[in-house]
Length: 243
Ligand SMILES: O=C(O)CCC(=O)C(=O)O
Ligand SMILES: [Fe+2]
Image (tube, rainbow, N blue to C red; front, side):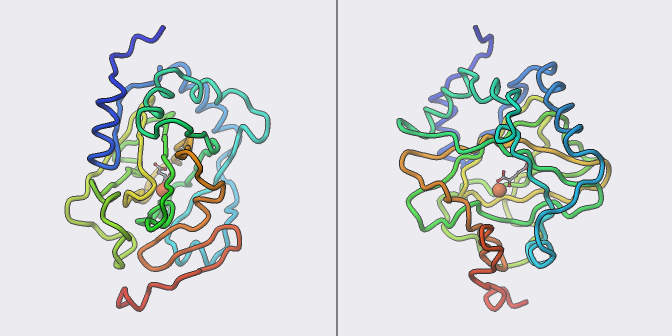
């Protein structure tokens, strides 16, 4: 039985108003330490980047993904199957929602984090729900804070502009070990540069009923739309950017 005091409907209301909800101390430290150890082991200290140089340069995004469940690592299932975690997801996405995958994202010290983006094009009727779990603290000395623009999930396409520039109204979040961040895929967000050590987040991505599997294949940045499956810039937005 869970000892958490949560009201999934209230959380869902906050989520739909703001485009995100940050829930502190949701998972206990011992299970987070266990997952964090697996992640550290998997990546070692210096993993290779899988993306092309063009992507890294244009997107100003440097992350290395890992899909543990696809490799038969079952330890992450406990988070995914947590009853409260699922109840909140159900309240937000309603019947028919599905888990897409569990993706750990690794960033090395000295890398640029992630530029402003939307995980999928906002003109479609489907969207992804990021369910980000933090297995270690995101602290100012290390960097890698998550920046969100509240209510932007209803504001249409991310505006062109400086990929990493500050935006009016932005909120900087520093999730701690065991925190969960529910984040709408249309909500404008970025990750600040990683100054020291390395940084992880683990995303139990899900989507509403009927969403296609390749929903997040095209990501919207301030200077382009990028398609991961083909490694192509499908829309160049630099003219609109004035850059
Ligand atoms: O790593 C994070 O904290 C945010 C990652 C992100 O942009 C996403 O999961 O869509
Ligand atoms: Fe994202």
